[in-house]
Image (tube, one colour):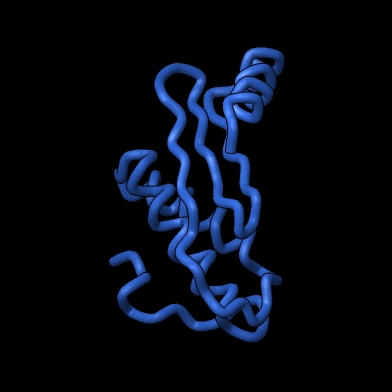
Length: 105
């Protein structure tokens, strides 16, 4: 991902007075851009993709749950990528997550 994408995302942040924008690009990775501070980019590990249905919802829910659990944005982003990546390796939109990817309640 180049600086142009981050510039476009920052334009959205300012235009709509947002605090945070998350842009996902499938196998090309994702970017979390806060209104102030540095962007965080991640590239998912290579995997055998079985079904991508549900990956975006898995990413979003994992990111939000991590923030609600008090994790910082980078930790939330990392976990969201891991959960979405796992979902892509499973058939169906809502596979049961392994214990290693579950957040404690």
